Picture 1: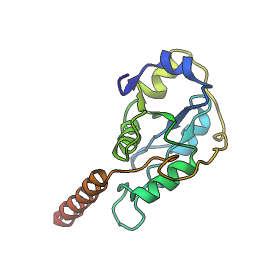
Picture 2: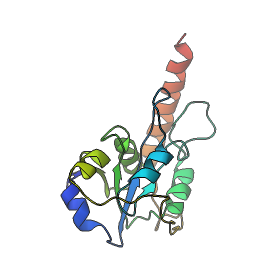
Picture 3: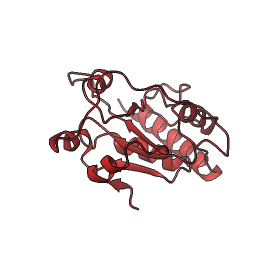
Length: 174
């Protein structure tokens, strides 16, 4: 299976016990609206928010930096994600931030991560059902090697190198 899934495929898979769907939307500072209000207005049924402002490294001044493997495992587990989960990301704009959720899952060794082709705009254009209001409660999963996403040493090293490079480039800007 590819990393991109169709709205038709997702509609057929909704309700599967191993499937988790996440809205990974972000809004730029100059945009009206916000991810939480947008989610409450309309979301794929059963979806939850995957907030890259929360699932991030709190020890840096830079926004959206990748968290440590332990923090990621803890937060992913709190969202109900386990190694047995199939995880689909979409966003309210189509494709802006959904790939970030997919990338983080893959970075930390979770292969069964996917992006919804066209995101919520395509889902809605096709007249598919939407949920409104707050997300359903998550069923937290333990954050361990056998039941939560984990990172290989190479991924963790790559993440740390990337963060150092971004900090260096950010410091060089006027």
